[in-house]
Length: 169
Length: 219
Image (cartoon, rainbow over all chains, first blue to last red; front, side, top):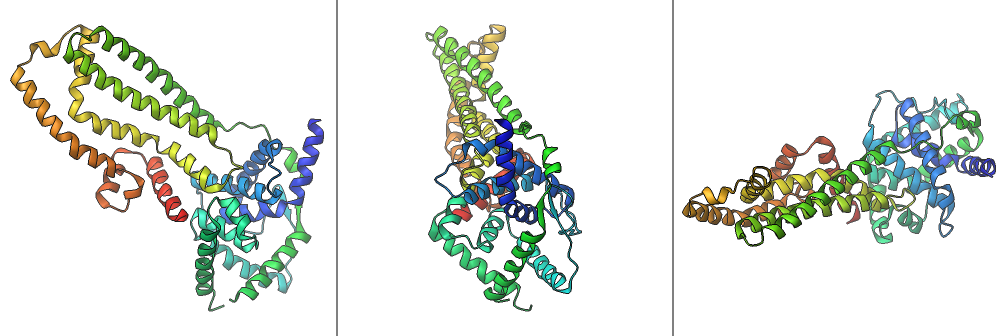
């Protein structure tokens, strides 16, 4: 029974691995921190796996847990590395390197975006991630626990900030 | 960068992750999934110890007040110490309740508030310490009577005691105002920030600052 549960968990984790990967990379710049945070998120997801509330989408539930753990981790550790080794992961989530010109350009833009996200505070970082994932205002409001109106106001502010930040690119 | 371009980049990133990102099952299996949350457990343990200690103290004070009911100065001192004990007990019970409500599957703002309120517990004791200053004599009277069987009041000059009580009573109003101000909501006021910073550790200060951020985020 436990083996079945674990298999089910691995399957779910595999389906939603991008969520964890993106959150971990947004909250940690250091490779070792990222590995620790990945583990902490997975442990917390496992512990809450039986308590999943089907009233919410699985992704909403996962975002809540992963972001809550990431914020706690960020506030607890904060071991920032100056070097951003964003794409050299060797942990639970493996990513193949691609050095094509197209990918190099994509990586450059992503790095800029990542730096922009890194400079936001913990809560705005969570909001930004959800916004970039094109989540609905309702889902963002469910994950964060603020009203939809507040979500809309904050997103319009973030959009302005983004536009200002990237206007010269 | 326009929204359209940003979406294009993110879509390309998503495509890349779809193709290149994989779950390392071997690495996953090496994780101890049942690892306990040591920090939360340790905070919970300390708060439970506090509840036991304050409960015993509250019981002792109840007994002390009942035993000295016929001697007003001892009974009043006992009531004062008892009230402070009950406030501290309520604070610790509140902390255990908060700790029990922490569920990472709940909305972020709600959970963060609970976690940071747990981390600001030290401020309650700072406030109780300040609030105790005009009535510190109550602790001394109760302690000397209970531990050494010495009634300090009986050996004091009545005029001095009355003047002392009046001065301290006058201190209570500004003190209550002062304590009312000592909250994360007033961290933008320099003296509030400095006073709190002087008496609490970095962890409590960081938690208070984050509570302020949460309040701003909610508004």
